[in-house]
Length: 65
Image (cartoon, rainbow, N blue to C red; front, side, top):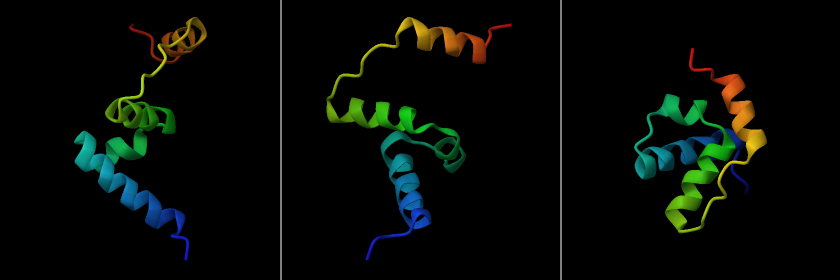
């Protein structure tokens, strides 16, 4: 039997808490890409640096003042 989305999400949230020290609210606010980057880092896979387009989008979303 395949676990429900809710059950799988609870399990993943618990694993993120143990592996990354994340509180539940941190897990639920994270994007799948952020979670993937941490999993890749722990598994030894290199993550590509952000390209110029991603940096521009981030600067627009999170201006420094």
